[in-house]
Length: 219
Image (cartoon, rainbow, N blue to C red):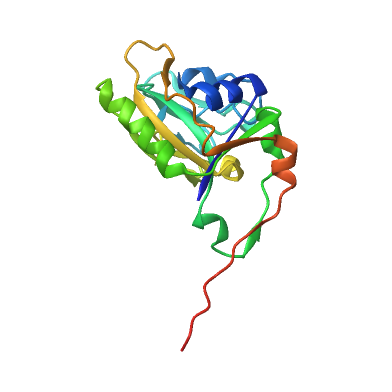
């Protein structure tokens, strides 16, 4: 239906007038203090949550030693594979209307910046990106993010570029990824996209009520 890019005004103007899109390595989000951008699981392949009450070390002559987790903390192992660069957008799709006919955007998105660029023709936007990828022989993937519970214990949980913790489910993210060749950001330019995009303030977008009209079914 549409995409929205929440960002600072400067960057959304560059997107509107030049079609500037920046793909970033996943590591920059691991330690980001911004609660919406920061994600310690970004770039991970799998996550394992342990639930050990104690560890007993046994030696044939020295006897046994019992160790307990520090302050009863649960152990967590994360395997990273930062082999992609990513670009993300808020998506308004049929998924927003699965359970009810209206919704509003969570105002947590205001933390991304004061500007919201509304992409009214997402198909045209994606076709322009794919055309530029093909021109430059860049491999790519894109999909909606699947939000899952990364706190499940005693199980190895697959993460990967299109899965995130359910703590970010309000972001309704659509993600585009390309290979990470040198761990540096990569930029592409689509040209002016103002024909099918408009800029609002992030506050105005979050105050909007989105209403879905369903087709009536005739029997």
